[in-house]
Length: 222
Image (cartoon, rainbow, N blue to C red; front, side):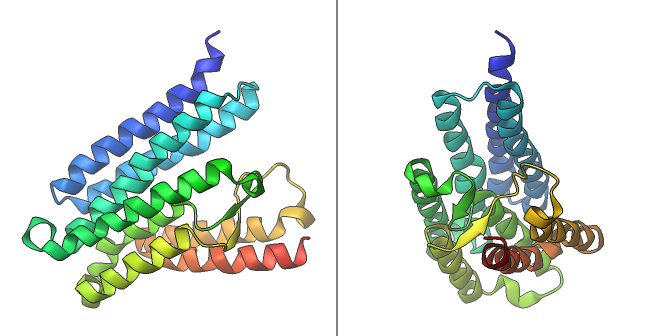
């Protein structure tokens, strides 16, 4: 009886972490936000893993997962973008919440799209969120990242990618077969190396590699 609640407990932990991250985002501490996004991402990965391992998948678990993701990977990144655009000092900043709208559309689409059982159609919300939270780190090195027109362009591109028909692989690897998963493994190794050296500033490169390796994977692994 206890094990059936473990995946949902992990999902709730994802949601709780996302809520704390939102508080830090509204307070303007955008770098601390990244810490809570990472925690949410870990819980988000392990809730599905636990459900498969314990054979306790449920309809409520699927719905709860989407609701938690909407907070941690939908509303949270939109608050970060809102703050980057100037927050309450700039009416233009409200455009950042477009990310929340398109994240909701993406999650709703995912729930009813039978094509997305083993792969993604459109950028998944966690990857989009990791990209958004990398921007405050990039701004330390590149002043143009704070340019409002650049940020508005990023908001538009990310929103469109969320609901696009772009085919991307899932990192839910069912086995250790090299020939079947080699491009996933290569992407994972490169991502770890890049993150080890560049930390959150590596995420835009990782996103580009994710899109690139996904296309190679589907072309040569089919």
